[in-house]
Image (cartoon, rainbow, N blue to C red; front, side, top):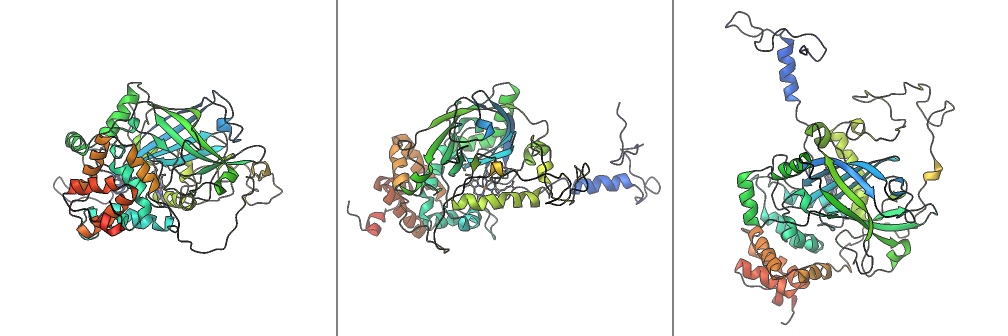
Length: 489
Ligand code: HEM
């Protein structure tokens, strides 16, 4: 039997009765262990993620099945058969830590690969596009998804007001309100890097790249009514399904693909390839096989391995980098900042975040600096030094990126076609899918002022007149979009 101790290792004689003056008397302050227990309990919670608070995760491997080394020098892709350990975290966006898993929402699809050149994080979603294309609008958008300051309820009015004033959101709104907005489990959905990233190879050539993870379990979705039943039964079905499948050795897998665009093509495409509200047509940039992602190990402890996982798009490795996508640029800053607040200065050294590669930097001291603090070579605590401290390695320098233009605040809506791609997606849906889309939108618009609804119908109409017609029919209201747009039928 292990002997119980205080956190300082002192043996404890009684963990049932607190120390009092007499059997019925008040407590004594010298009952340090009682005080310690209460104080620790008050510190059990850390701030939840400001978005994507509710999540489910597991460990696994990426296995390379196709040689893409001509595009990238990233060692993780260096040869067919290569396996890299990783940790995945899936999430909903808007709900808090205790939210029901089955709510209609975009799902996060965050992956951390422990490569030999440090951690590579791909922090994507189950959708290839996003609601906004300028990060200036991200906090505003998120406010519309969270609780109203007065009612403390989520507000359909806020959501549709914002979306109807932000036509770039139409593509993602169409996906969210379609079947894909309510997958039955994390295993039954695709993942996407969503942004355009870059690859660069040993010859210093750059390619733009998009990542796709296609579920091998098949797509499965619930309707709103089915989802409501699930939530009535359990609020934790994603955790049950993912954890249960892995415990039963029924390991979920995804086929991994990339779309590759030569650097200079970016100047030729009719759309901005760095616009996060657009996809790249597969006809122009076909999917190229890369590998297989498999989740095959549950965390031993949810809090330390999943809740404390810290993903950041700033974690890149030689051969993989960013792109001019404004949204990605902002995320490169935002996540590490969030982790310093949520987890503390040295969050990268928590076991789940700790790279498997050597870590050598000159950051010094700070709260909880429990790991090496220049112990091995105490003279090399600044750089440059002549004390054999770690040095930069110019061989991993990214090729220079040609950029031009005047510094200004450019109107991201000017000359941007926000309707063709959502319209194309709508036209791909069969009748049943279209009807469910109309119904889901109508339900989500309950209580929203008609003026806002009519403004949104104009966007649906511009994507496809049948889209606006169908939503108006589901709502039982007159569709003013034809009149508003001046279109004749
Ligand atoms: C989580 C910011 C856009 C996917 C977060 C967190 C922040 C954040 C602060 C919480 C991090 C934490 O506390 O651990 C932003 C900003 C964005 C943006 C500023 C735009 C400017 C996006 C986009 C995607 C995305 C476009 C997907 C393509 C995720 C995911 C998580 C997350 C998956 C959860 C990661 C995890 O499982 O820990 N985001 N985000 N975000 N974000 Fe974003």
